[in-house]
Image (cartoon, rainbow, N blue to C red; front, side, top):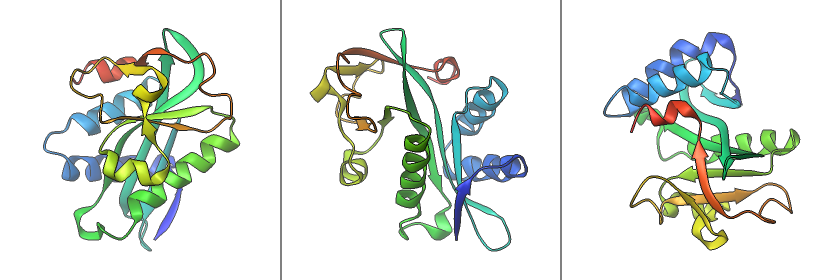
Length: 168
């Protein structure tokens, strides 16, 4: 399994993976829209020896109280059912965090299962006075600090990129 930054030829495989991995095509449409709008900060893929995409993690910009603080959201994250429970999702997240850190991003937010994200270093966003607009998501709204000063003066509403609003 190779974990790397996505390249153009991966788009069809990513689309196929997302359509297989989720109940609807919303995640595939989201990634396509992020890509078209130039809002895909980073995409990380897991491929097999033949280059087939078996895992994917997307990162896109978010704002805090309307301000760009060099933060990104992690969504979606998908691993093909045939290779789940092998640590691929964790590898995708870590590869993404490493790359984002190299490019001086400050923090990553995610709306996901705390049992998965907490062991990776994510913590409840509410602990830092951070919230998102989706009701009932407080426990699942997590944040990961890349820069030491990421949470200095950080409090309020996190807004995801516009394409996320189309898929509520």
